[in-house]
Image (cartoon, rainbow, N blue to C red; front, top):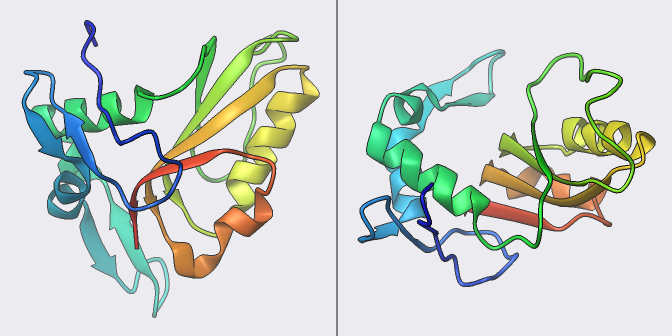
Amino acid sequence: MSGTRADLGGSAAPGGGRGTSVSGSPVDIAAVLRRLVRDVPDYPQPGVVFKDITPLLADAAGFAAVVAALAAGHARVDKVAGIEAATVEVHADAFKPGERVLMIDDVLATGGTAAATARLIRRSGAEVVSLGVLIELGFLGGRARLPDLHIRSLLSL
């Protein structure tokens, strides 16, 4: 990220805020996410609205601003663990005791996957310093399953 940093006001509160793009100009990260995350209604089942980040991944400037925002505002981090749904697994030697790990996910919904990932990382002796998410679906109560974890969401719905 060559020294570029997004400043979300240092708050752990959900909702997003202003950040800095790679070019250094101000960016409203929440607006970027609203523009570049597509809703897919009734997927994977009726009544569910899937949040598709494919348009974000296809937009270099938007993706760079979001990555900068996710990376900003953390104390020392030794590793970043990206969470992907389905079975959660890591290599046996992925984390060393005492390492500080930042977990990143696209959506915080019920908190089950993030809780399982944090347990897996901690089992290795590493410390989970924070969870950064693009979008938090607050109405599903995921934070309640992660009471001991600092959570930073860029957009709360």
